[in-house]
Image (cartoon, rainbow, N blue to C red; front, side, top):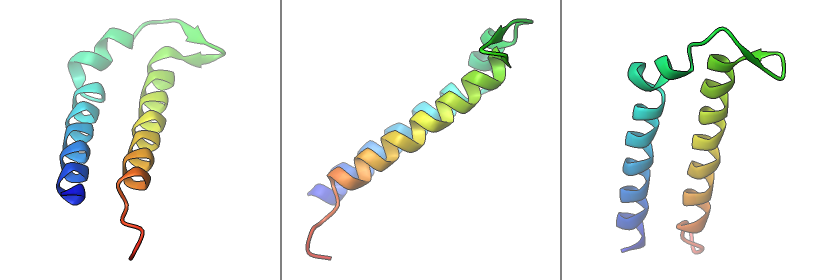
Length: 68
């Protein structure tokens, strides 16, 4: 049961990542301004990427089986 729920969370996270890192959403941040000296588009791509990695780590660690 835990493995099935973990897989469901990972699929949802993958789909959310696909939406967040795809053209229509990224075009919102394609502006000529910077945030902390970094172009806004690059900042958003890398911050979304880090968030996806963090959420993946959270899901994997929360639903990992202790007896393996």
